[in-house]
Length: 406
Image 1: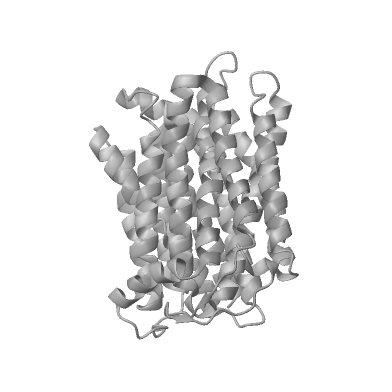
Image 2: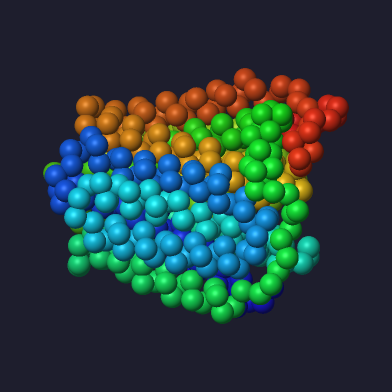
């Protein structure tokens, strides 16, 4: 796997995932443009996340069954169509449908993760996947800054039209640099691959427990980032889109720092990392709730929240992928479906909470999601669990240590 291909993967992953998060600092502008009530504008983010969830289940598993190069490039071109639809939308229906399609095809990022793992040699696999993941983190948090800055100069529609142009260039680059005619990795049928996904989660309580943790932590994550634009753009702050986008760059520091969580999990400290991170996540909401009083406290809370969420996310994946090394593509699809559902729930709940109870309501909601995750981990981490193979067939339970438990 050459440096050029690795860099192309990282850039493509960052741009693909950014398409999901562009809307968060633009919600107020969208609401004004279409006359959508503040309590309902969170539906834009919710539909994007729901589309992403459907893509995880119905598109990502295809990476094991078809030519990944064609799948990746095809998703790229379809993403261009969806982004143009959003950027030129004249009605709410087209806007909502376009955002759902943007989310659906943004699962390109997960196909790239498994593709990188396939192309890399065993000695460089961790490095290759880590580089793609770094692109994802930068894309998630940098999207807010890019979207806010461009929206201040040219309006929110320019964000999606510019991304359409960049995505088109990205698809063309990937078409040129990706290896051709790679055989599929699995002889299974599409239906068999889909059937195996729920079996992996239902038959293994460790995997299911980590999926539920993902749902709750990303509900908390989405609660904060969806609602943040609402108080910061209003009096007494009146921040511009660019200024609000800077908060994403602050959060990037915490998210990048969390990449070391995978190394801690490899050393047998996955449970310790999970518990500490979930505690920090809950604590972060005490700082975030101080927004009307202290911006520095809010900024500290942003770093702590993103550090905690990404640390749990990295640890979750490390644990579940080790349990089923022959089914990683299906695992990433199923696991990220929990992620997407949590993000969708957090988005619509956050704007509703803000409309009825202000920033205090948002902070309470985020703390509730975080507390539920921490309590769930405390009460289930010592459950004895069984094991299933990659096809979802059960096998006798085997001894597990603390870090294999939920």
